[in-house]
Each structure stands twice: as structure tokens, then as C-alpha cells.
Amino acid sequence: MHYNDFMPNTTYDDFSQDYDRFVNWGSRLEAEIPFMEARLAELGQPEDVKPSILDAACGTGMHAIELARRGYRVASADLSHLMVEKARLNADGAGVDVVFKPAGFMHLAETFEGEEIYPFDALICLGNSLPHLTSEKYIRKALADFSACLRPGGLLILQNRNFDAVMAKKERWIGPQSRREGDKEWLFLRFYDFDADGLITFNIVRLRREGDAPWTQNLSTVRLFPLMQEQLTHLLEESGFTDLRYYGIMDEVAFDLAGSENLVAVAHKA
Image 1 (cartoon, rainbow, N blue to C red):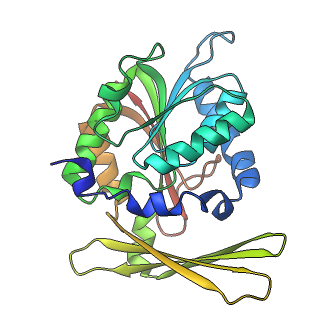
Image 2: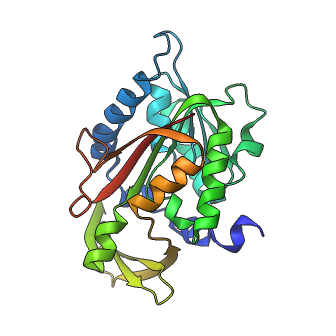
């Protein structure tokens, strides 16, 4: 079975041109990059040798680009070819050198094994990307692929939604976001459908208008596996990861099962 059979990339191909309007990259990178650098420093490498990093679901490449700006050796992948194209344009605009390749989970090691910086010192998988795999079996295979990409002792950082809280509260709506550029305006509305088979359908409504013209609308949907902390712990340990630590956001904030918005996992390859 090919990756596209259970995680179609058409949703994010469609979303690629608006994704950088959807995310407030200035505030997000300001909050998250220091957390990543603190974890990378724990690898104990010489100051003049920056760790090599694989961004396993890079989207439009903004984390990878900022890490490259700071001197890290970075490669990146995304299943969506159009996201990768946008990421390359963003990197060109920033004047940094990042290797971007279209590749999905379970195919990362075979995609990057020829690169000079392979195996990697660290792998990041952010933006609730791993739960896009819709079964535990495929998540297990993805984690095995992550492990294959890392050197012994290598660092793994995962950023998922806190699905323990999502499933307990069954709150459908996530806070809206907006963007304005001159007389153009975008609204992004997100909500969940809790499906009978135990999965979640994640819906993104994009509204756009220019001046006084009527709003246009677009709906994108994708299925998610509500990956709980206990289940993730089991899968990580089974995949050979140790020294597991959990945070509620990408900051020095402990994970709260009932209240944290995110589940950020930090681990090392044995």
C-alpha cells in the first residue's frame, strides 16, 4: 500500500498558497525555536559543529529556514509537492540553503540516505503531522522510519495536539484566525467531526474576499488519528526511543493531560 492510499496530500496541496497567511510565523518561531535550540544543545556537540536536522513534515519550510539561518544543517520533507515548492521559494527568498524533497513518513530514510548530513543528529515532526496517519500500525512504521534517519543518541521532537483533552471534552471548534493584506482579507475556521470509527475528521474553512466583493469559501478536510499520550509513549518505547519527556507547548511548560493544548514529546534514539 502506498502512502497516498491512507493520507492523501490533496488537502495540503490545495492549502499551500494560503498556509503562510494562516500561521503567524513571527510569533510562532519566536516562541518555538528557543525550545528546539535548548534541546539541540543537550546533544553536547562542539559549538563549531551545528547538529544536522531533518524536518519530517516541513509544510512551507519556515522552521527549517529559521534553523538554517542559525547555522544548523537542515534537510526537509513534505508529502505535498506544492508545499515543497512553496518551501523552496521561501528558502530562496530568505537566502538560506535547505534541502527540500517531496517524501512522506515511512519513506524518509530511503529518500535522504544519500545526503552528506545523513544520518541526522535530530528529527523534528511538528504541526500535528504524525496523527495524519490513520492507524497505530502506520504510526509505528513512521516511528521506525524516524529512528532509521537518526544516529544513535539522536534527538526526536514531536508536536501533536493533546488528543487526551480533545477526546475528553469533544469540543468541535478551534479558535478562528484571520489575515489582511491591503484590501484582501482571509478568515480560517477549523472544527472537528468525531467519527463513529474512532477517528476525527479535521475541517478547515477558508473564507476570502477583496474589497467589498462577496466572500468566497473553500472547505478542506483530512482524517486524523487521535493519538493519546499513553499510546504514544508505548509506541516510542517500542520503536527504541528513550529518555521521554513531555511538554504542554514548545516551552519549558510541563504537559497537563487535561489542560494542555499540545502534546510535545522529546526523546532520544537508544
